Length: 80
Image 1 (cartoon, rainbow, N blue to C red):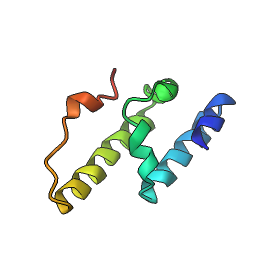
Image 2 (cartoon, rainbow, N blue to C red):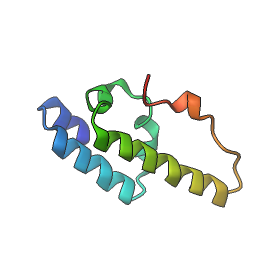
Image 3 (cartoon, rainbow, N blue to C red):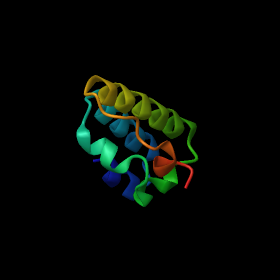
Image 4 (cartoon, rainbow, N blue to C red):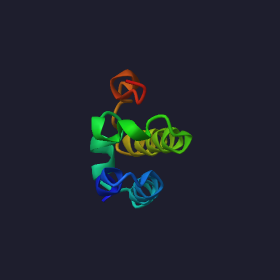
């Protein structure tokens, strides 16, 4: 849904949608949040930077709870 909001230039709605996905622990958010170019227009927004930071914390906690090693943060840079 966030991609549709982006297509219409509704960045505030897109960020709210992404935040809801993170709050709901939607697995799809991790698939594209860190690197997908479609979100590039949001990367300079401080709210998006905070969302990425929070997503990394959530995923680290999930990985630790499941006994997985930490992921390579450089491979997931939101700064391209």
